[in-house]
Image 1 (cartoon, one colour):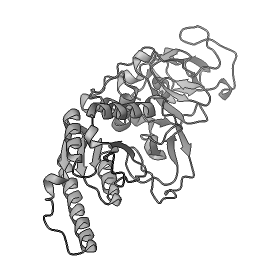
Image 2 (image 1 turned 180 degrees about the vertical axis):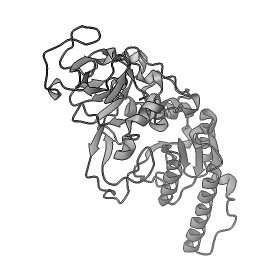
Image 3 (image 1 turned 180 degrees about the horizontal axis):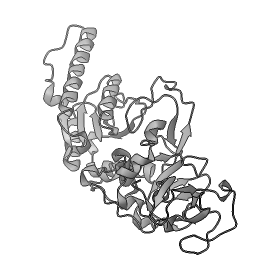
Length: 383
């Protein structure tokens, strides 16, 4: 997170206290740019000089920021007398996929300093009455309310225009590039927006099979989300509350998977006509579903169509369409719908002899005209 504390000279104490509470890096304009001792001969000359000085300051801030890890937090204390410089701050935060927050320091008797910032969350404080704990509680509450009240279900938009009425383009949450053409966006907020290709990356299920941790493919038991420590990402709420990454936090899990690319956020699967959203819930939520592929119970993690209440195990999504079984000589074909095959005079599994429900997937051998539960086939996924 990047926090810009703006306002007159009294902002310094606010920035310092925030940095102390959050353990963020602090860059203060007053420590870098000396206060002018003599006024310039004309207001226009002063404006030009001030603009050049601030531009130099932001160039220096960007250079310093490159030497530190922005995901460890950065606070910038600046007068920011030109609101147009907010674009520099947005770009700085965007380089590390971090959120920009403005803390505007305005004393009660001076409301003339207030600026309007588009597309940035702004908090206003009085430096004389400032309490860091109160501000952080307010920030945490707003972030939690924005992110935790819904599941970030992504919907496809095919005709997105690359610029808004104000001329500002939207950036993809994953690659940070401007979006044009098809995109996915959260249906309830504008926090998560992706290029279609980024949300579906990797679209090759063979690559997903190779990179997906085995615990995420577990069908019957809640996964432990044992993700590599170096890949774990804290959500904004946990960052503001000075908490570590937690598998009990839905947004930490979402952000970690989004940046680590363990599983695609969206999958277009042959068994369903709509895109399927990846849903990853903390095990403590006790989220359960019936898999529409194998018919068995699933917990915590699924690919889901919200419109149709259609859910699949991750493991079922990743099944090979044609595969070799150690229990049969011929290659088997995965069938999603019993109408795809011409025969149907036998409703039992070839291997276990138990009943098969026609609405559930099965593996089928066209040579021998046999069908079997997908769990009974002992499919070799390395083929």
